[in-house]
Image (cartoon, rainbow, N blue to C red; front, side, top):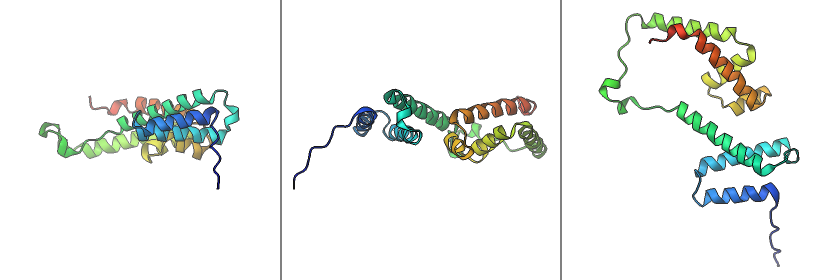
Length: 169
């Protein structure tokens, strides 16, 4: 049984193979880079590779954007266990009026959310309260990721303005 030599890959697929090979050899933030590249290629395939003028540039930019988004997401969600905090950094016991302040803050947040346009409100709730990614929200709502980010920015600006009176300092 004879084996014919493998056909060389061309275009974007060759570039994809090169990048995946580089990550597998231990460079460039391996798992995150591979995941970002796979997400980018999936987007290319879903939207039709033929519609993209420069697939190599698209893959580079898409992968870079996804890595930046992941980095921002991780930094925004950094948490430290209470056991790792110094004694002086532990939360102080709540005062007698904390329950009232909390209820006022919750009421103000509800009012601020109600004032938002429906799509902004849905994006905010799904992302901040339910933990959905911007990509998941975009797919579910039939929007572009960019539009989800715009709705989220608008919601955050509005809520920030409306809750200024509840900032303790």
